[in-house]
Length: 371
Ligand code: TRP
Image 1 (spheres, rainbow, N blue to C red):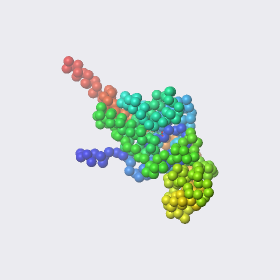
Image 2: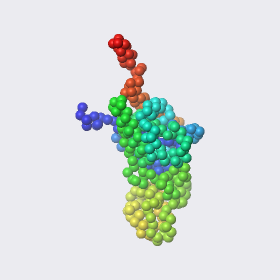
Image 3: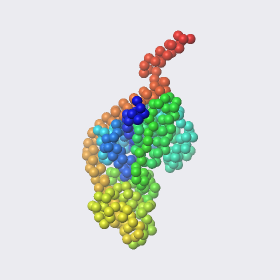
Image 4: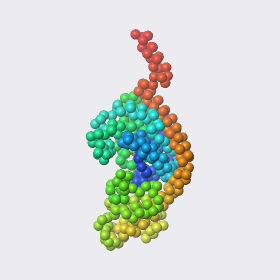
């Protein structure tokens, strides 16, 4: 077989996930969820696995198991609401896949403490949580367990926000190290980032760098119309844009950041036909003469268009929790099968598959006869 034929044959597999520590918000939507649904519906992928990362969530929530348990269902509802389709995507719960823990254990031997200390995401998360002197070991090593998550499914593509890039890099390193020691076994993944730079890390409604539950600056996918309206109308804009006629800054302005993620030309035609597109609207704001209220009203209309079908699907699934439970059970079963297959390959490569066949016994016998 020629190389390009082999490449063509390689399955395209997606693995990604979220920690169940709270409801998902519009930052998750533009940063990852929307892309997942597009990828799912492109029919270009052979297998798709979407993971509710409860075990990872426990690495910094060991004392709050009930919080994680409650949020597992919330995340599942968020997934189904945005249009993930259980016929195409396996939705599953991380802690029920025991192969992940075993892979993690072997990968821990392939990474140094100083390498994990250099992981920028872990570094900033340790700071954020004031963990500097007391970081739980499981939390410190979660990038390695994330490599287990990704490789267990032989994932080729991982759609994530840019804060997860260091995790993918670390996974690729582990894959190369593993393959160089034990022979070609694991697949190196690549990250799929959102194309729009504002989407890679959506700012909060307060203009802070990141939309985040702990900063209380989120618009949630499950917020109702009134909540969304209130939040949009209270959004931070340009503090120097006092009068409508003042020139305004669109750059650090979350109203324009959100519009660049969500507003389409159809939205302009429908709600704000005096502009063809966001560029024209921005130019007007920048030269002065366009007021914040008008911009916010438009943003609210755009968000409502995006959120309404999401709310409708949520309503259906909230009334059919049995169905959601069954979707998770089935998805977890499929994920388990795949991860077990990979684990067998890994054990074989590492020569610890003692009971998979007779080789181990035969080798030992031969050794003794020869001496
Ligand atoms: N770390 C991700 C988050 O914070 C969740 C996650 C766990 C993940 N394992 C993963 C994402 C594997 C992508 C691939 O949301």
